[in-house]
Length: 378
Image (tube, rainbow, N blue to C red):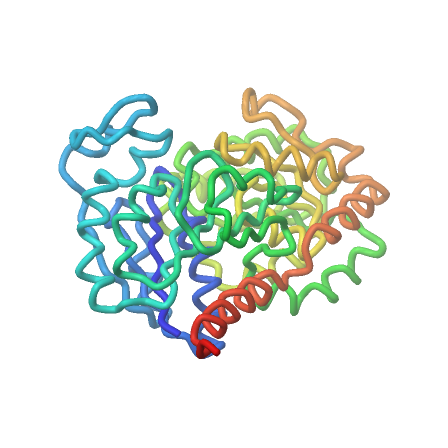
């Protein structure tokens, strides 16, 4: 089975889209599939990471002058109506599709998998002659698609949220039971849940996303100075190698009253989370990783598209929301939050959200569709 992914990472959009596609690609490769990527060369792209994992990555260049184009309600230079995230693409949809044509025409993938807020039915239909089936990964439910399979791993999302946006015969996989997590999270789950039976706050993990372009990490560290953390608490900060505030954060941790470290390019996040007692994190894709391991979280919404995830996990009791406004001046860690009963309750609620086996469930559906399509007609 040949699979091609179309996804981007950048300083503006972060790394989550590419990272969850890499998770699915690794699982597909383990199942015998051949996977390749198509990515645009935005500042902050992850092309080197993709290639370091053994995948072929085809590059699309950014058109000069497109960085500010595509504001919602406007039109691009090609006259194409712009969506709310059009400016993330670095080209118009028509231009992006045209650039993808020679790559897909040669590969003729069994599945084209697209994970991009700036792409919709227009791009998908333009490329239809060059792929056999299309899978869309989304979590916005705000635009039409011409796909065979749609995945939204948001906790609490319902099939009905997409029914008006996809063809009648499209299969919809909705909910956190389909969360795309690397296999080490499910492997660490029993250990992680067991060590939370009698929780105590000794290890605090801070992870605000792979890029954190607005330095939420630094603002969190500043707010912690006035919080009632135990004297023997240790702080671990995780950042991506392309994070623009990395140097400043490293300097900031040197003056904290607790032993602190900054880790870059972490390859064993599951172990770090399993060994942590509380996380302060963004409401992005790592929400499902924390839930799988039952890790209580003080959660910050850094982008509007994260609000649905954050509110659902807050309502469930798996996380406590922290407003981004005035972050530095509010008690983000309270006595109540570090109370063992609170930590235990949050851990149980988080663990019930996902078991970490979502990638297996998704792959089962991908393989099944290919298998059925290749059956001879009786």
